[in-house]
Amino acid sequence: MFCTFCNHEIPKGTGLLYVKRDGTTFAFCSSKCRRNMLGLGREGRHMEWTAKQVALISEHKVEEKKESAFAKDIEAKLAEKKAKEEAAKSGAKK
Image (tube, rainbow, N blue to C red; front, side, top):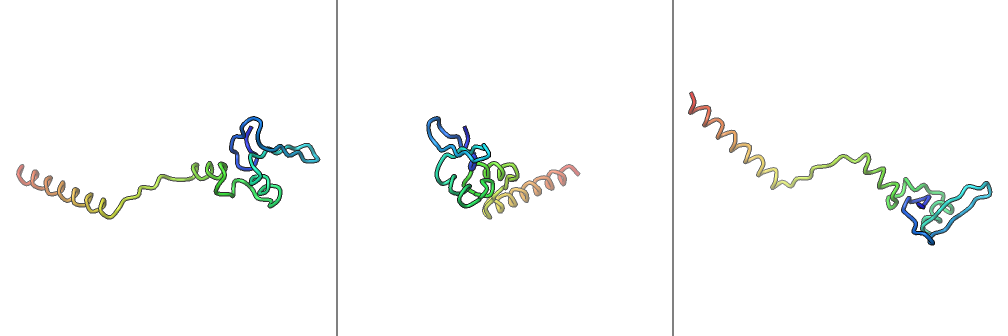
């Protein structure tokens, strides 16, 4: 069974099952989830600490390539060195 609010798995024999008058049931893993949904009226997909939010972020997130200034300098120097070698080879062939 999974928590209605945060979508974490609830181990058997734990958690809280809340039943509304119309018969709908909500399963909660903790009182934190119960209070956020029923007491405060929040949605799990808007909370950063829930598994639902993590799933939404991971679907839309594009892998960002982080490089330091040092790495960029090394890459630029290697590109210059390669260009000089190619120019030397093409000059020697002529």
